[in-house]
Amino acid sequence: MHTLYTIIDDIADNGKIDVMQLDALLKNNDREADGYLFFKAQKAADRIYKNKIYIRGLIEFTNHCKNDCYYCGIRRNNFCAQRYRLSKDEIISCTDEGYRLGFRTFVLQGGEDVFYDDDKICDIISEIKKNHSDCAVTLSIGEKSYASYKMYFDAGADRYLLRHETADREHYGKLHPAELSFENRIRCLYDLKEIGYQVGCGFMTGSPYQTTDTIYKDIRFICELKPHMLGIGPFIPHHDTPFADKSAGTAVITLRLIAIMRLLRPCMLIPATTALSTIDEEGAEKGILAGANVVMPNLSPKDVRGKYTLYDNKIHSGSEAAEHLCLLKKKFENIGYEIEISRGDYKDK
Ligand code: 5AD
Image 1 (cartoon, rainbow, N blue to C red):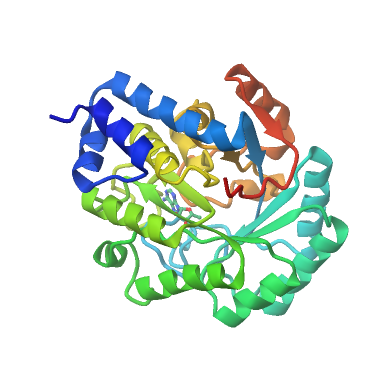
Image 2 (image 1 turned 90 degrees about the horizontal axis):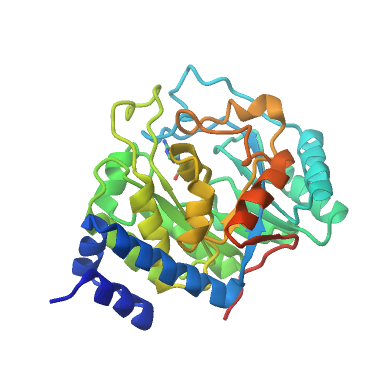
């Protein structure tokens, strides 16, 4: 009989997991086994990234979106959302402030907003790279054509985040309207890799209709795509969406999946997400202690932070705020970790 401990050792030693092992780990009620899983994952991260935590300054530059994802608070059919867009100058000021605070990676994230055409995006990227040539620019602006992705890359973008959301086609269809295609989303991720970006995919834990089987497909997909970054955070319902009444994901399942993915692909950059900190006050520390090695404090102008509400109660004024980096530093010092001031690129062993 396999105990949870032998399963964890097996995953750590062989970099592989089967669906039975995954099911056993997800359903377990043994806190000590969780402790062992998290400890092994933390050690795996330490072997490559030591006790360093990489920081990314997150600039949420538009909450307009042409898509209508059932889970998301900035979906186009949420008429209660207060919409905003940042100008190029406002975005550039955020990066200048971020640079002063010690950020060397800027993540430009937004809804799929047609206002920012390719020329505007390229102009913003090249301006940031001109002002701060020692910084990385990460884009997180959704599904685009190969040609657009290539233009952004040639303008200087280094990385791209596009969560795949779920690797199960049927599950994808339950989270999104029919006009959004699973195939296109996956096509985007492979295009981004081919162009040369450091690529991040990811999914929510506890999203409606998620099962052990869909999670197992996520894991297999991630092992095939081999992304450099992986975002995993709990689903949290937003009151003005079709999923308002669905239940939220949990911190413990999120932590287990962070740990499992760290063991399966030790080099990945894995953030302790804002969603995790939203459902658990100690989410940032717990994430790191379960194998995460990145945090993405919010660098958006303060007056728009409350409007980028993908889910209810999203935190935006505590230690996840870029201007309070010192609070985050303290939190991490208390658990033996240090924030690193660098681009924080992917390490290939
Ligand atoms: N709860 C948690 N995460 C969400 N996202 C969107 N809506 C929610 C929600 N209700 C995540 C999606 C998206 C990322 C930017 O935020 O996974 O890719």
